[in-house]
Amino acid sequence: MSEAPGPTKAHDPVSGAPVRVAFVALGSNVGERFEHLHAAARGLGAMPATTIVGCSSIFETAPMGAAKFEFLNAVIALKTVVAPLPMLDVLLQLERSRGRARDEKWGPRTLDLDLLAMYGDEGPLAVTHPRLTLPHPGITARDFVLRPLMEIAPSLQVAGQRLDHHLATLPKSARTVRGRHGLPLLERAPFGVSVPLLEGG
Image 1: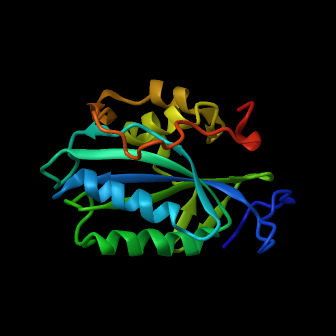
Image 2: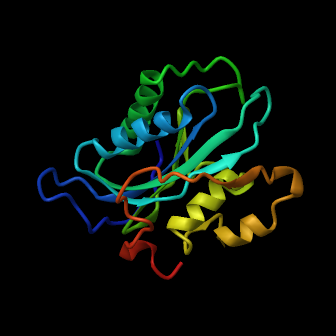
């Protein structure tokens, strides 16, 4: 795994591990979709030394590929000391706990969790590993990721451009969001990210 160099100033006072902000995309299009997302959000917030610092609206999204039913999609921001690969393991375990089977690409799924990006005082974390690439290479091509991500971190930049630039340049065929879902993902969850490392773009 290759991480971006540079000192990390924010550390957990107990473990001494660097504190970062992680963005996780949530999706579901099978069964009790809202409950799958809600359970995942609770599980993410229960990770060690982790706090939910941002929670987007839930978006209704058209199915893709072999999927037949509409998705619910959202993005959560976490302040955490959990490193990228251990966090990936948590995401996969949460998927399995909701009955997720990874049988086909773009197929139906009870729960789909993707680690999108992680940011520390050193800036965006760059990870190249057989199991994980950060930032997620699909961020800029998916409006069901860009729109909820823009809600909670509008100044965020990916691939050298702000999120609104990526959204504005998406082709019509990639615009799958149909609207916002009426229910909040988490009651009393913070709507937005107020973290110094994300200020100023």
